[in-house]
Image 1 (cartoon, one colour):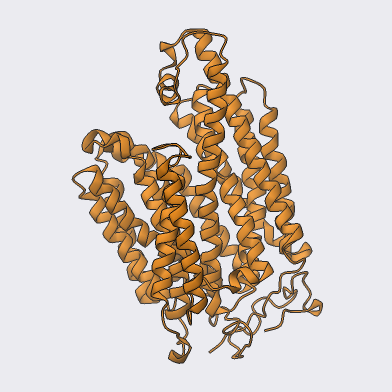
Image 2: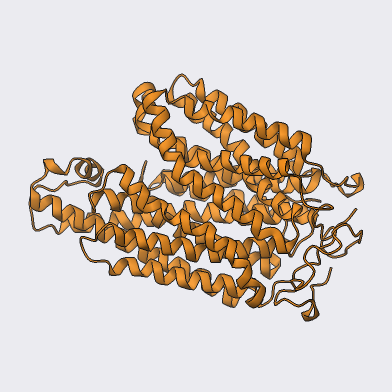
Length: 537
């Protein structure tokens, strides 16, 4: 299907005066693997929209509600040395399954993949609630993540399937609102359940939500009947290869510099094995009839540019999400609740600018809108390095508020834009590739920026002019938790070292934002090749 030309009214071929025109028109398309499948007749039923938001809420809540219950979980089950895998194991499972579920949804439809994902997430939650030790809980969290991967990618794809281009910002803003509400409510809800009920309820609370979403999707979601002749053979070998390769790479990134040094035999062995597996996957995918990771994902400039930009977004998000709470508690002296509030204000402005971004990209285009957003984000991230020491709490909170506003202007136009350049049969794969790159960027960013932070703190400790400081990085966390045990001068020097480390982290995040801007300006086309809003019956 050729891209819409300038007569369509918008800078990216977005129809200017006929939102959702002829959504039921039956037109075949060439060159995209299928038609530019748009929304079904009329707007989707309210129960379908509610079920999508419930599915998104399950994934969003899970990332925040578990963290606050970690002390109670460890106190009950033990396993303090490996509890971080409650999060790493889940992240691994979500990340490596995203491209697999994306391709399966393009092959068999969104509904069966979404139903499978909800059911698996429900089963994982039930198993987590019945875990008898930390090893079992980590294993069951992986099961939860296998379901979460299907939920995260398929819900985003359905949002594009069900709404015409001009109305997609509305549903995407609702999804962003779900993430924002979860970021604020998750820690509080997890703390209440862990303190006044039992930590197992943080998983049991998923059961009624998942069951309701499962019932609503099964009953109300209807997809156009696809021709069986369009379904190729499922590339199970490629799916297994992607899963193993991604799992090894992320395992190496998560454990490197923590469980063993970066240049140790385990790190080098895992990275080498993942490189070999990557070469095998490329060979298998080239021969596959319907590859899980098709080459066109990287051959098309628009998709490749968005993937790279979203990978940079995942990397820079490590700074506010991972290191800002540490800064707020260790440097500013705030408690866990105050630190959470400093970080969570970012989620208040994000959905607002995401919802308003449509008024911008209709005038200047998807690429330019995202470029403006990420350029402003780079300035906001850099402004953190200009804060005085010690800063006042409102100053980093203001930075987080502005950062959320800029990133809402950056992310949503890219997602809506890239989904609008492909037809139904490629939308799941495209959406999954974007989310996959963001997750990988986050994993790489966590490893790289943690190494920067460790190097900065180690250098400050080695050159310390005051006695009484911890001699090893492993002892820094305990010293920060109990600063009263240190001499006042040593405690102040340690806080200054953490402030310097987080400052370097935000410099790294600024560099990632600049890299994303360069990708948009140099790789992305000036106008996204938006397909007409038609539907293939």
